[in-house]
Length: 338
Image 1 (tube, helix red, strand yellow):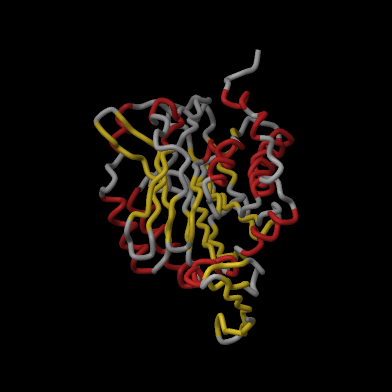
Image 2: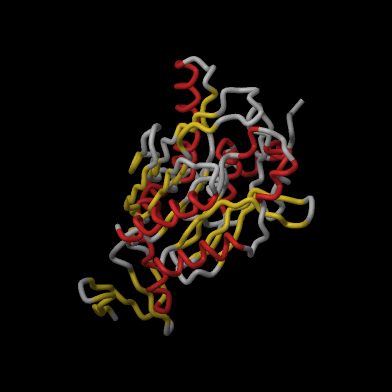
């Protein structure tokens, strides 16, 4: 028996009763769905407004926090439902030197910063992605992304897994590698695949998030130029950074949000000329297409709409997940095949 029902006042749905089971064909994407799952299913038709905040930081933590609060409120006022901050946004990027006194910047989770951002998320009814210096125990610290849901509750956290140790990026001195895996964080807007900065160079991390159902890949970041590099080298570095993350979008059929800091921060040791953080925060769709991109010389707040239905369509057109040869990838768990 074929009948016409209304999925919502403006759309019809065909219903076929078979063995007392009601099967719906969603007119938004055409997929069959069971009666009780209609509301959850049509998230494919969602459009989410995302706010990205590219900030230049100062040595004054209070000033940084107040600037962030104003930017968060501004993004929410322009309709943002999800707001993403840059890596270690409360302070200057302190990893340019190794200094044990700087461990005093770390906080417990929950702690003062989570209380501050929880209130902002709840007051503005947004999902908020933050990046904090976590004190897990005396002498044990992590670089940790904390996600707040629209009611201000902590939806989840992710501890940075890949830790660099390069001139002016002495992160191994400060951060213990993450130990809670690559787990998407469930929020009221969907599953967020939150990773942090250096993770962005690793396709394995993005893939694992995608395989666990992440609907967006998100990278709070702090990266920039050393002033002694030649201009052509600077261009290659910036392009590599952008290309690698656009590739994650394409390979996994998912939008990518990458938020970087901007401005010059001096090296306290004076061993280098400091870091010129290159900004260029961006949002791309599931084919790597640019939806928004900030500049490289100033703070910016951008609100952009992401059509979540595109991921479903792109994965149908380009079924990379279907064609993976999982039976032949054992070597990927080895350091090197020699």
